[in-house]
Length: 259
Image: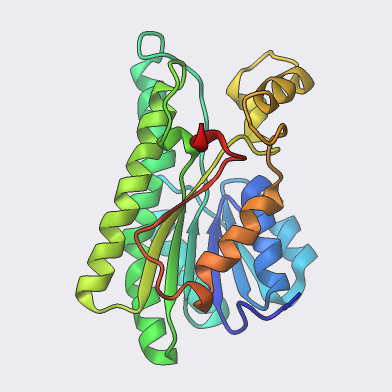
């Protein structure tokens, strides 16, 4: 297998301390990229950067904060000299129907899962566009949505709404970049249940093994996903192999959307 699909690329991965973000960061480094790992969990981000060595750096990052976003983008430039790739991965999942979701929870889920993606696209895009003009080639924004942004559930009102917003925002960003003549694509990916720590927070108090088994029964392939299932897709969409793919959405859902 090629190990240079992202050679020379500089990436920023949010929520990179664990779960999908950590899998993407590891895979990107394995494919030749240099990666700034950002997370509100500073200790976790630091541990992973130390594990990955000179190709990785880290910074604490609250994706709901415009100031933190500006600092993160500046940190990527300071550490590696620019930015080619942004992976908006940071997210939370809190269950609740439209009736029992508090307004506070609604706003929190949207702040992290949708506002954080908006801020990333808005504040990182100028550096991505400038770096690609300088270096040639292309840049990429990859927004991690969810199959829940395509298929709704009665008990995921806030999460469904936020992730559906990410889907359409990604298309708007893609069209903006194309119209402005930027060599930058923007796509979204839509995972189903993946074996990451976010599962533990979806239905508090539920036995994890039982919850995983319940989720697996909903997937035609009979299992939940693994983090690398997402990381491989991220490599493709952020590499020059996908230079003609923009405004697209990739379902990584074990067949759920086919039913």
